[in-house]
Image (cartoon, rainbow, N blue to C red; front, side, top):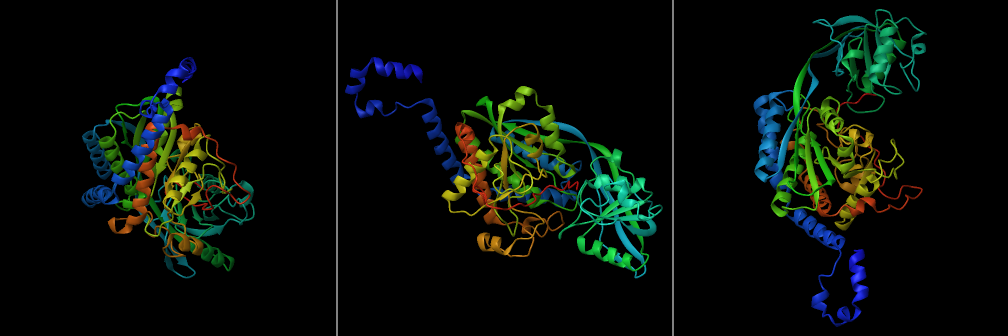
Amino acid sequence: MASLAAAALATPLLLASASPAATADHHTPKDRETRSAAKLAAKLVKKSSADDAFEHLEKFQQISDTTGNRAAGTLGYDASAAYVFQQLKKFGYNVSYQAFQFPYIETRAEKLDVVSPTPRSVGVVAMDYTKSTPVGGITADLAAVPVDATTGCEPADYASATFTGKIALIKRGGCTFAQKQATAADAGAIGALIFNNTEGSMGGTLGDPAGVKIPTGGVVQAEGEKLAAELANGPVRVTLDVRQLQENRTTRNVIAETKHGNAANTVMLGAHLDSVSEGAGINDNGSGSAGLLEVAEELAKAEKRPTNKIRFAWWGAEENGLLGSEAYVASLSSLGKKEIKAYLNFDMIASPNYGIFLYDGDNSDGVGAGPGPEGSAQIERDMQKFLDGRNTPHEGTDFTGRSDYGPFIEVGIPAGGTFTGAEVKKTAAQAAKFGGTAGLAYDPNYHGAGDDLSNISMKAFGINIGIIANAAGTYAHDISSLSKPVPPAGPNGGQSGSGGLHDGHAAVTE
């Protein structure tokens, strides 16, 4: 650009006599990139279709119907990964598998019965990596851990009662599930029941089999509080039966990238491909996977030589603890990390009672985690601008660490993306903004057998595919917006509204 300026100063008469037609193409490379980006983004948004992406969802459903589910380490996941790989090869991408080992879990029993004083059955979820009970379970008295801000996290919490030979009843919050069960075990407990501290389903992971000491299950808030109330009136005896198959298995990420484009300016878009074992996982996360496939196809048709490299990823074993994205980030060299200018995550983008939530890159909501790495606020700003231009309402959602952006943020890579809600209930204000039903979960079938083709919102699916298409088209040619300052948020949060929601990942640890 400096040489062009010098030439312009040296030849004023020539420039003065030039016709408008002769100077019409006198633009800097950056101008051309900006125009190319806008043109490609508009084309991808127009061409990328929720109806076309639905065909991929139908394939995922068919695979699940044939194999039982699409969980990592199963035939259903392997078939899903092979399908994605084959599609991307057909589109013309450089495609590869990244294999990694992980601890596979298959729950064999989840049962909790109150033996006395009033016999009844209680719903329970086996925590991932729990110790297994014997067949038929363990029968023992319950002992409640006193409730405070860090219930069951410290040895002193167990000093007021005898826990030896009993099953500890512990309220969620203050530390990891793993720490709660380990501390209870050290106090003599032979099992642990952790009950939720909010409404909604209860489950999660103990993180690492090596640190697990006793059989551990989760129960919903209402049941936990009912058991605690019964205990206040006298002994409560229960039978806990939680058993899991746990073994090391190999699974794979699918990675695809454009054959051309500057690798030093790589933009990644990712979605986890695995389901939970309960079913097909069509919203969680067939929706994000199918949306990426649809945009990848249209990008391949529309642009053979992008300025920047676009890389797509379909992660394995997300539901086991973000293991696929963690394995990928861990495999990157120092240069490889620097080359990735942004990571965009799309997890659950078609919830039936949806909201449109953008990850809060600048922490303008002031909820939970702080801002993402430098560039995250710009990703959020770019997505907001696209939605505002289409008069589409949106809110922010916190970087809770429960989806595949987590490993990227941890190494300083800017991140963003979208999410349409999971187990949290929609508020009246959100129902007025987005439509749908207040007081009902964004996805009532979250992590359940009902997460099938009938479980999605095509409207939300289409909105989010538009966001993916616009981002891919823009960043394929122009990433300059990722370094443009974002004005500070106002005192009430200026950039994204207030969502403060969980995202779709199953591996809740606390």
